[in-house]
Length: 436
Image (cartoon, rainbow, N blue to C red; front, top):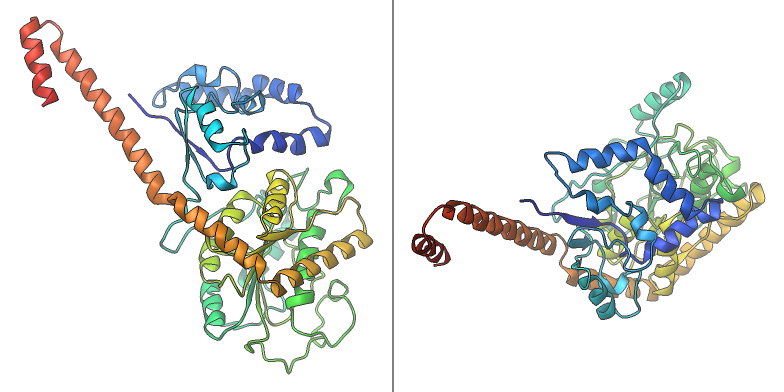
């Protein structure tokens, strides 16, 4: 006997229909073609075979309608999932299948399914790790540059406390002297080698992933960077040491600390001119960094991925959201509608003019949130919603209860086997002793 529990890292099942529309239909695909691909994929079928064999022994009926295609049929989406699903958001933030939460819960209950809105599963202790990027291969020249960047920890012109490389400590020290902090992290997909939505890709004739990431960084620095002595745009400057006011005190309260996670592409910093109050890394311990921020003072600029959304709201942080594809678009719209952030959509055109306009839009959004306390207040209300969901503690209690229920059923099955062959009175006494 085993128990199957589903873990759903989206805002409930209702968001999948929009996701499929954005990821497949807008790119010229069809739902029928996607289902056919699922059914004919050798890799997918091999995975199903493995899950239905020991030691997992899942019921093949679980995959009868296809998975993930089950989520694109009529509601209730995902009705072939496990009897119990842990959903890593609060019910108030869900993408609804039905307008009423009670009606939605009843819809799944009728199928023998129970939904648990447990909120984000963030650890209390520091040290949470996550993937840095999906870059898979490096050619000889890229390896040489990557190794050089590793020795200097992916920095160029990032000279804030060069002897101390612990990012969390740098952020903690900045907050101890009253400095504002801006964190920029646009996820692992846009900085990857993915041919459709990665670093070099320009989906829908938009700007490339590289232009998007660097445009966001430039827009943030137009607001939060140290003053430039030159009127030249930063993207036009490669390693210009003389364009910043070297008399400016990077530890001054007026100089925010800007921390950027740039991914592992070797040209991630090419063309950027980074002032001394900026720290760039291939990746950062995002949860630990966000934990140090103050909601009423600081800002998180991210891509709208589910993890980043939940992490930001868990700490009550307002956000500028720069979605690139998929569920990020819907997440950005939701945060803006709830007043906890502003979204800056990916341009629908390419070229220098599109990049420049995007940069200005990012700067305007950063400036607006920095000057308007209502965004932090709205994020704080959502933080309370997530906290009330229970998080890791609630999820652990649900899983323990499921395991104990399985153990109890196993004991009953063992008892039944042991009673086989006994006369009725002896079997009854054995069952009564077990019950007491």
